Length: 152
Image (tube, rainbow, N blue to C red; front, side, top):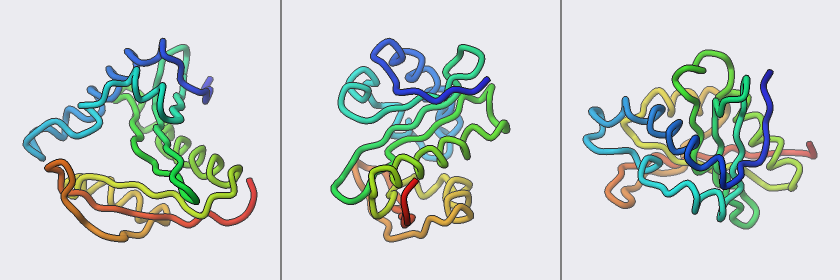
């Protein structure tokens, strides 16, 4: 059974492990650890709206959201490799859209590394549009946005 819930400080170690497992394959491609691998998840859980997808008692996915005025920044989304291909990523994105609609926000914004081309293709397929590209903290990023219309 799959359950979405707000993360607690006790989830931080499991979230950090999940993020390391999910993003490690990108290290050779981008030449360094992706930004989400550098975060302190105890701090992230304390400062952001962090949700986990728990499946059979394990943290199978994570979603990090930050409200920024009329939009929500989807700062991180990751699925544990052991749970890939089971629809958890799409369910997390749908949860994010519900979150935005419930708060009557204008849009969801996100960014991904420009070398994570499969992520860009997925977000585009799901209705996100590229707004710009920029280098931040040494990472070449693609910024995207999806409008959110109507109540949840």
